Image 1 (tube, helix red, strand yellow):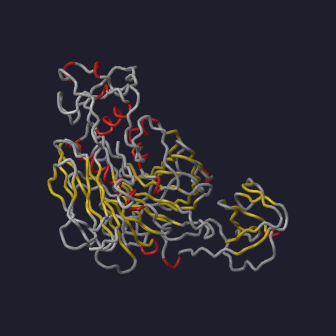
Image 2: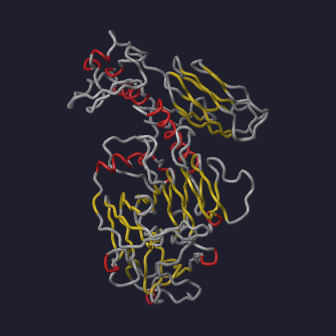
Image 3: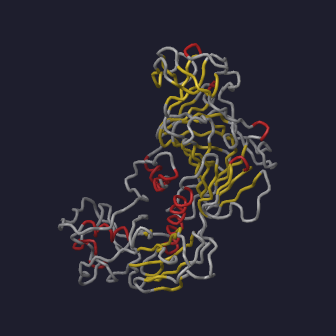
Length: 547
């Protein structure tokens, strides 16, 4: 488990980052989980608060091609932002343990969300080997209209679509103020904003006003990246801990988003996964929640609806030059979509549960796959001492997995700690080397070949914390470094003077500080802990140094 903990230790100026990482059985000595943890933390830290119609560099490596000239170093490191209007295509790198990279990028699109809902947008998250090429040429790009204030003449219902066959989503009262930003294709209805919802009202129920400047909305208008060509990796990831290469799309609550993906028009009100499979010949859609309506995507040209927990697939034609990058690499839907089928829970668990760890700070709402084993990023309180609680009773046959701690090693035997909070801390921190299908194993139930002659005493370690302290000048501060662990802090990627201060190499003391730094107000550096504790992350700080 990866946990981010923020607190106000050492006064209001100190921000502490506490990470405890459970690596489990992993390839290449646990380096793959380390990369995944670092990438997901970086996404949340770097891209929280990204603006509408902006792209964010989440974690290495993200490549982008722009429609305008950009300076060297532009959009080249985590937390960098770029305008959606300037992007021709964007690509994230596949997982590579050797290169220590797993590309993650984020796009926040307005799409067909009205200007009157400024805080809402459509979120795209590119995970692994994913490429999006803009399919909206500048001369065809739609510009949303500024809303026009109106009042309701009579009590009326706002409908979900511009016809009397659609349901009422909100009731409006005579005299109520609304804002309109578009008309139906036949000019009979106006699209209005009602609180956080968008509905349609007949013009006869609204006050007289000149609405000729409003565009007619027929579902085909597209802003940049609202229509795109998707390309993803088609092989299995390099290690089992990673999710498959995928594009995650999440619309705002209570709003249906219009998109065109590889030539197929879709309307979604949900969280959806898109990927390319079968050597690039097939596109797959998996609906995590809500639904996707594919316009004319079913048999005989009927709309196809894919609902929560279902998937559908569709064939793609031969590559051609259709996007804006000038390359013949764009494939469009060329057959009806398959009938929606339920996704087996084992497939969701094996392939996609890692997405539950995406920080809610970069989403419209958290992702919930109802996975049996949830690995999450969330604030966690420091363990507190409680009354002894009996260890859980095994209900299944244990299956033991060798972890980082050798039999008889330091802190081994923590499974039977009487304090459940501390027992849970040890488990999260990866000190256990034995795990069972039934949960944490009581010490007495560990087989002799895995168990030392006597358990270690019940001693609660101090959790490792690292952060910064402003004071007279900024310093890197850490504590709780366990025996056998080594701390390294890299040079800041943000300019500060004098050069080199703040770096730490090979620190082994339980607690300490770096030298003073004048950081011009900001500081950003990566750190790693190796040896008896393996984790990594970033230190981000802002101070007003007086040096």
